[in-house]
Amino acid sequence: MSGEKEQLGVRRALIRKGRYLTLQQKLTALFVLTALFILTVNLYMFSVTNEMTGKVEEVYASNVNLNELAGKLDQVQKSMEEFLNTRSSDAMEDYYRSDQAYREMIERLNVQVTDNEFLLTEKNIHGLSETYLGLAADAIQAKRGRNVERYGALYEEARLLYEEILTFIYSLNNEQFKDNSRNYQALVDSLRYMELISIAILLLVMLGNIGLIVVSTRSVTHPLRRLAQAADQVAGGNFEIGQIPVESMDEVGIVTNTFNQMVENIRNYIEQLRLTMERENQLKERELMMQSHLKDAQLKYLQAQINPHFLFNTLNAGAQLAMMEEAERTERFLANVAEFFRYNVRKNDKDAALGEEIRLVDNYVYILNVRFSGEILFTKDVDDSLLEFRVPSMILQPLVENAFNYGIRNIGRKGRIELSVYRKGQKICISVWDNGTGMDKERIEQVLSGQAQADERRPGSNGVGMKNVMERLRLYFQGQADFEIVSEGIDKGLEVLITIPGEQEGKPCTG
Image (tube, rainbow, N blue to C red; front, side, top):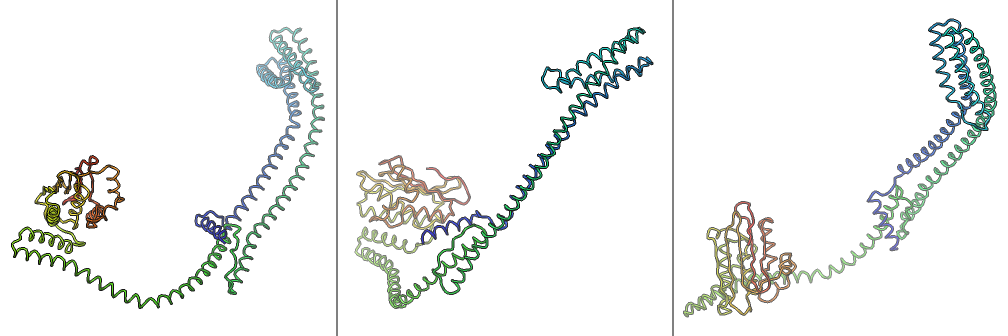
């Protein structure tokens, strides 16, 4: 069962990420692949057919070239005869043009020694043509020099050589035509064979397409058939059916996953409904007990409100009694203690003026000096213009309390605590310094990050620690309050520096 849930979770994750193919995408991919395959086959057949057609066209190219060669040779002979008969400049130009054209054609003939009969004949034609062109040129020069006997003999020799070259050309042309005819027939047979291969390939492609369509259709209909059977069982009230396996992440797969989830949710709902009914019975039994407990809680809450007032009222009564008995020190001590508790009750979750916070510190230090026989040397340097500046209540006394408890208490020398409140630029700075045990960098980082909370709950603490002071300052000043702890090391004293915004934005103070 856990394996099925794990597989279901993987499939749901794939669906949420979109890593699945829809039916439309599958059919489109099938069509595109089939079309690409058919296109590839057709392109291949087309290229083969074009190649064979090109070979067919090349079969008789040699015969065409030989016919063209014979034509150029005939033009050379006729232009030479015309010049010899007329000595005209036009005839001379025709001769030179035809001579040049014929020379370009014989340059394409074979001149290498070979055993091939065709190539050997080409070599002979090339050699005879060079000799013929030389005789024709000599006959032209003799005619221009009016050497009748010489140009006549040269012309006759050239004419005989011309006829011999034509004989070689016609003989070679006939032999190549016979050979080309055999090649042509072989190419025609190959084309017919390619036609049969093309038909066979197209038939295979058609059968492959039919097979792909059958497989694709089955991948859709088979899961739908199983889903329909499971839906019939659920409609009949059977919710204990197993998970339907998902074969593909398409629309059918999504519907199947959704169906599996629906059945699982119905089973879970039925189970939760049963548990809910059991819990309702238990809740009814406990209702009367809860009502009595609520009344007790309300009573204790009222008592918690009365007790602090009763405490500092009692202290005030003791102070009045001490005053009547002229015990001034006792009266002053009780008055400070009463004022201390009255401030805590009155200023709970409210803000206060800096002057009120400083008077609370004075009360607290007085009480400590009475308890510890004046061991604490407390000094303060306060800018009187800042006494009405509003701050969260109970932010100075916890810092002085920490300076006493964790700084100068039991250090073996006279303990000193200094409180400074001053303006620096457009910021207000509050500093509490002591000459006590100090703190290393690691401990400072723990306190500033809020990880050092254990010591704040030990006896003697009022429960309002540095973390609480930091959080309330940052909330009160909307994140614009800075909190810094400065110490040169163990037993070298420590300074807590608070920087809060004044009337306008400005640079924070540095200690």
